[in-house]
Image 1: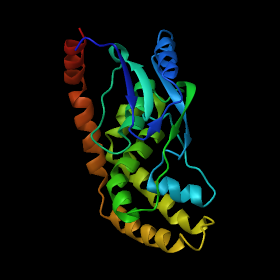
Image 2: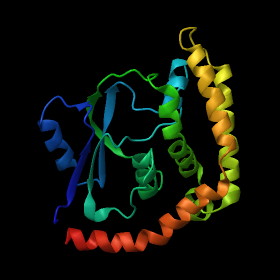
Image 3: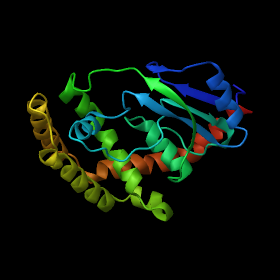
Image 4: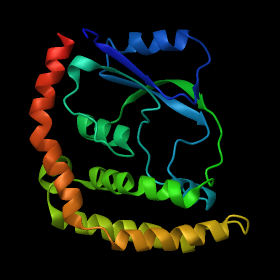
Length: 219
């Protein structure tokens, strides 16, 4: 492959000028990652959109919707899950801030279309992100492969969904949110902590092989 600088861009992102891409690549001479401020439609999950509708915003991280990085300097790979960009970037930076230098726009969409279906698709990735975000900086791997840690994360996630009742939701959206709450709480009850621990056990076990492969394709 031989390429060293990568730009990821979702198909619903709009940029003002091609010069913005040049700015991103120039900035990578000094930073490992360079992101953008996402304007327009917030890049958020169904649950995140529920919180926004109710007047609150959940924790955020730099989006992979428009992100440039130096390929030969990364040390972690993507999980095959929703929120894969946040999880990957958070692990690779150990949760540190990422430089953002330009503004881009995300096209609008209806965040409550196919609400239950989309939320169920996203939920495992939401939980994996929650665990990644809450894992201690100096004990990330130790925590993420521990089922006891994921017991706490699942309980926390349950509390997040139950908190829907405390949000100021409009009458128009309220029936959708109430149904979503019931469905997600039932789904979370079916999840086992060992499932999430094993995902990260496999992830860390295979990481050296992935790094070897990355080195081969970038040299």
